[in-house]
Amino acid sequence: MHTFRFHTAALLLALSLGLSQAPAAMAQSNPYEAGWDAYEAGNHARAAQLLRPYAEAGDPHAQNAMGYMSFYGYGMPRNRLEAGRWYGLAARQGHEPSQQVLNQIAPHIMEALFVDQIDRFGPDTTDVGTFRYDVEVYCIYGGTNCQAWRTRARQFQDDWNRAAEAANLRRAWGVYTGGSDDFWRRSRERSACLRRVSESIQRQTYGQQTWRYVDSCGTL
Image (cartoon, rainbow, N blue to C red; front, side, top):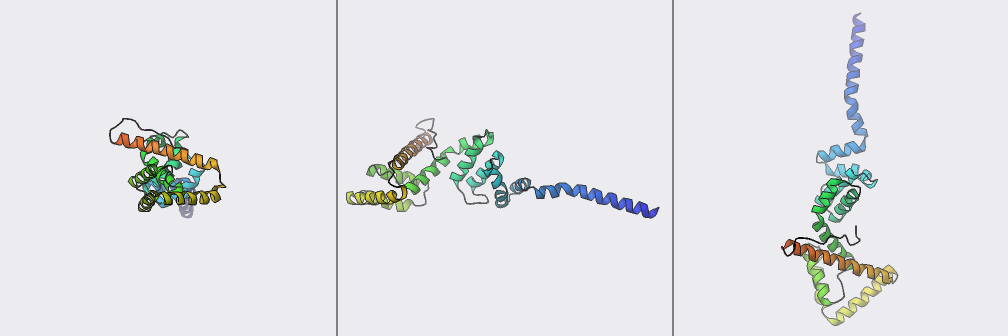
């Protein structure tokens, strides 16, 4: 009789321990839940690793989290363009927190887009004034190649250097784009659009107007 009671008690204890440990084991075996646990614990590198596949698969909550971590540089290099992309993907699915944040950080995203545009395609070469304007805005927005672009702007003022620069750009981009006129047209349109957005943000910032021009200029 005593042996039976002992085995019965041991069995109940084992079952109770197994049931109490089951949720923890399930959480550990579920990358999505483990990702959120890491996120809430402040282990952002681990959270990004686990949640990224779900964000890429279209989960708006994971996309929102990736946007947050990208914007502030938590668990990954700070990248406002990447943050805007993640927030934008979630917002287009009706994720309200992402929509609200995207509206709040829109000026920062547009600044990052402008910097990226200059770094990738260079300032507008229509004339010296436009070129220098693009460079100065780039520097105001914290572009990492500010000094290099300012040096280029000074060189660009000289007619000979301007002609040489244009020729070099035509040759370089001709190899890259196959001489596509449409590529240059779209690049100029994107530059003009980003310039309008930047001017609008500056006027709103300095109280010259109460609204700002919002447009991703085809970059998101």
